[in-house]
Length: 245
Image (tube, rainbow, N blue to C red):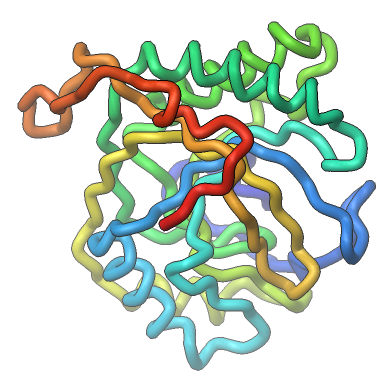
């Protein structure tokens, strides 16, 4: 079962190869999306590494290195179908809306074996749901609500640590992750990226086109302390330029 169909804490009974070619995808074709990326997040890296170590002896999977850990947010469209002017308008509108939100704090802990991936759900989910709803509103403003892709009802925010590469029982993977008792990882989200990605090498790899900051001062982290912010400048929005990290 897909993650969206699994009750909280429950694993799938069977898995399947993640790398089948979904409609529209092919080698060399790229896709624009809103994602959360995780540079300089040592707690998340530590947690992911615990699961990667536990899964290293399991059969038929692709372990995701720290560089490509991500939280899928919202697709925009294939790069050969979204014009430069349309993309610029989407980035501008999303930047205006997201900057009104503040940084959010989420936690990752228990890993779940879903049908195609081993994932760490984000909690609280509603913090990320709000970010995604904002990106969808921006897309609707530019494209029209009827043209916004993906079903918002089937979204459960998570970070994958491995993709399955075979069809079969989930039991070996469930045993590996449930034998692990890692310390949860707290992550502070301060921006949303617009990325240009591909999946040519059985890994989602991307370059960042724009980094959209979350800078409203009204939000608080989990400790209750106000998160510090600074005024937004055009350079922060980084429209149309690669992000250098």
